Image 1 (cartoon, rainbow, N blue to C red):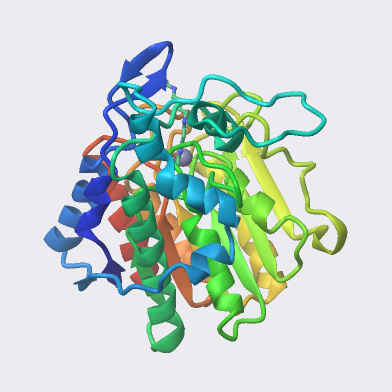
Image 2: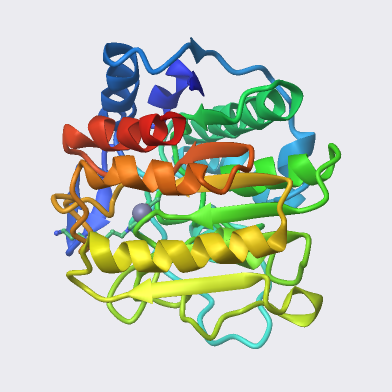
Length: 342
Ligand code: SP5
Ligand code: ZN
């Protein structure tokens, strides 16, 4: 399988994450992508290609103009305001009937942030833009050639970002941008399978009212983990989108046998939908040694995951999401991709 990757991911290199009341080194750090690309090269999975530039219009097809402008200008405005650290929100419009967008950057952070752990830092916009281009280049290549699978090694990740909110280490929703690109370039039905440990609240919200993009997610039960306010089984879509969002929350300690039962149900939904193309939000934070998660998948299990997905027989793009800083992140990601190819 071919991979799309850009060295510019390194522009996202925040110094801080708010975690347990401390400012720690972010879990979502540049070495993650290096572990993965090194493993791709070591195992000779396939070519690693640089992305093209598809510009702003596919990003604007998903994200609101004011949100994009906020991301583009936030860091400079934060520094100009005289703040010394990285940009972390401290106040939210929780419980307001209507919210007027504040003018000052400090208020805008809370207006646009869905979580406080993710600091805005120098280079964040540039890296997020490039990550979206990695997703777009992958889907464009998949739609226009004969290959069955492609891997977009996106960093920063995207599935928590909504049309107008960032957080959970995500700024632009790469998989949603790619899915809409499919719809705008001839695909009638697009399925998104989200197997990151965390619920893909951003992707869900973006397509919640639609019946042309199926969203199916396997994740830690939001009663017990981030993003806490989305991902319950009863969230199934709205209006003509009813039935086109499907959630499989699972409890702490879930191992591969029961996780795979949920995967089988998810794959049945996708097969019944008769999708032209499948996009997989690929997180490997389901791994037993992931530092922030509570599932118990082992490295060899990821080979089976790739094989199970391949059995659908649908053209598939894998889009990188989470999976934190342990050396096995490279092994686990490449096991999914190699399993798919096998
Ligand atoms: C893309 C993705 O996987 N985003 C995940 C964002 C999770 N953010 C909250 C992390 C909370 C970590 N809690 C620290 C526990 C340390 N043992
Ligand atoms: Zn995750």
